[in-house]
Length: 337
Image 1 (cartoon, rainbow, N blue to C red):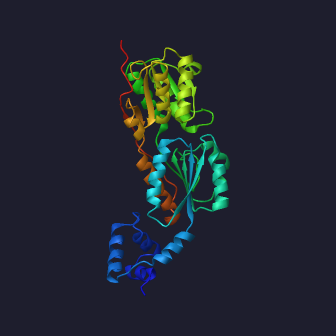
Image 2: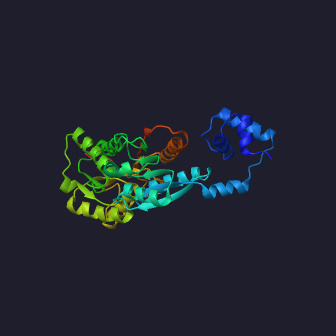
Image 3: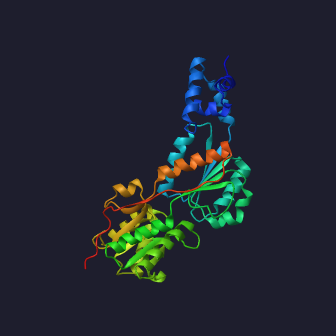
């Protein structure tokens, strides 16, 4: 009987490379794939499904820690990750946290109880990593937030430049003639993502000769429909002459627009709104929401590819920024002179 080891010997490639070709993985060079497939065909080799199933049952897992149970961007990224992992022998262990929870503490617990061979963090606070990550010794990728300044050899990152994106969102409102601009975002003391986007807001205000009056212009909320709804009501009550609002997620923006409508205010006729993430729901909402669109498919695919590179090829940590784009939508109206 021909075995996978025979295929490896005849092709000149390792058993792991042959396995990746047989499992239709995309992290194999075209030359290797062609050569291995030729040998498989020549020997009429058929994988032993029983053995494969046994390997899958005994295979080690990849942990995915998701911060924010209402984050639609993360839901899209998780779906893409699942599609990629399904094509491999790996299994996923999912862990969902509140957006203010300590993801590194959860990672330490996960490593102790489930012993994953790698971890993906969707969202994260670098302050937690600075204090606790030294205790995590498996390859990891921080997705959507940057880790290039943390200096851990086993921690990569794939992210959007939140500072530049936050500035882009507020620049769009200034460009439309708005000066009374409010901001609806997360807790700046606990949410690293919100803090980065807020720094971008500050850059835009300063570039237009303005300063952010925090007590008046900023209102905090969780990244959910309900919290966006309540936060917008609080913002309008303390800033009644606001004409435009940057909301730090599309989910919050939808809740915020609903709050405005319930108060008898129209978007964009009375108040303009810019969201963040570029989710499908924002595209089909009425009005279509102007938003900063993150490339969730690229964020997902590069994160998994980098993690595989660290696990299987012992590659060094990688830090990448994925470009964003501003989608104009229908929720912003130019301010009349």
